[in-house]
Length: 312
Image (tube, rainbow, N blue to C red; front, side, top):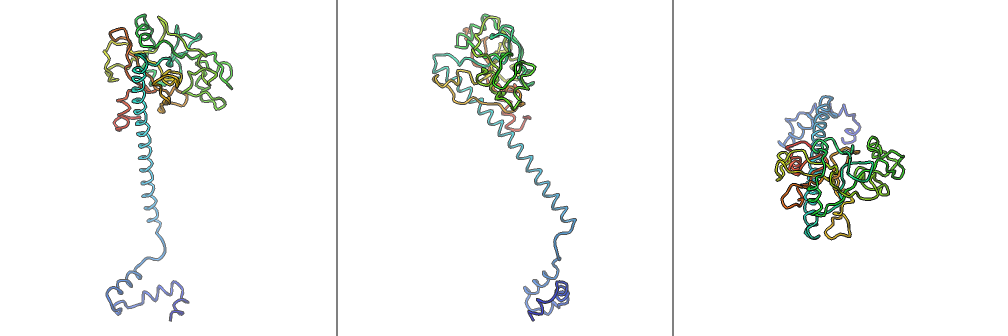
């Protein structure tokens, strides 16, 4: 009997199965099994069923992708908040360990044909968002004294005539500096742009000494928007937290080991954080005010990205 069944085609087997009198089968459980086998559809899915399954899978994949992207953005924002905290603590600790003096030799965020900030101009490497929160200003004698009294005496300036390795003459000029950064044929990067040419940057070999009347970048985003404790008339001088700052000099006590990078700007834009110095405080000493990211956002605004209450 078994041999005959094995010799039958699929259609013949199906016909035999359909012809069985299930009521004659003894045992309720066995009858249910026969009913299940006989009523089971032959073959795979219908086209409609396949389309439904594909649609469901596509919806799941799309939702997962969106969730992962959002997680990535939140993760980056959380990392930036941690970096801002690390810089703030590092600057304060540096001062305690170095006789009341803050770190020195920040990035000026400006370029000039001479290695000074006298007559310097805002660099094109700043992101549009950051530049919109800053304004060109000048250092008064009182501003200069306030900075010097806490150890801030020098800054890095971009040299339009600098020629890093594998960069043609004029490659560091403000009109072509972004193209130089994105050119894969050299080692100039957005985060190292203020370093000297020998270190694959477009900065001068030496640091510029701050002087009375120098051009500097001043925070103009408004203390209310920034949520800063400064008065509405206080002057906040902005410097970039570059790799040449003494905060990262390994021979200095209290120095940090890593220079943080801000990732939410273009590949050809300055991607370091920015420190604000209040030069209007009483006592003739500048005070550390806040860390701003490369897009001109404060820590509170970065936290808003982490909490998903504002866009990245």
